[in-house]
Length: 110
Image 1 (cartoon, rainbow, N blue to C red):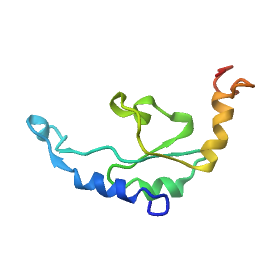
Image 2 (cartoon, rainbow, N blue to C red; image 1 turned 90 degrees about the horizontal axis):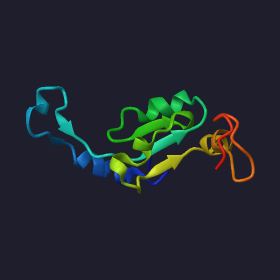
Image 3 (cartoon, one colour; image 1 turned 30 degrees about the vertical axis):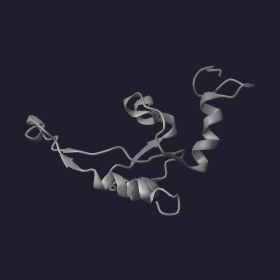
């Protein structure tokens, strides 16, 4: 995380861990935690998934299973997203480009 320049964001997330107000504490939703960086990977890279899964506030997602709520939580744009090289190469296969249609999305064309 330090090499990617995301350690400041991770430290900011760990400082925002607070107790939730109300009855949510009894319903296994005890803490409020701010969203941190999102890491998007392309191939099934188990080493990256296992390395990041225990860092608070950091989410990881496969490029084939991206979700709009992960990219822009709460409808607010501007989340810090770290893309791996394999994820960027798969984007043209999934969504296509302005010249060719996507192969994995069933003819999806930008």
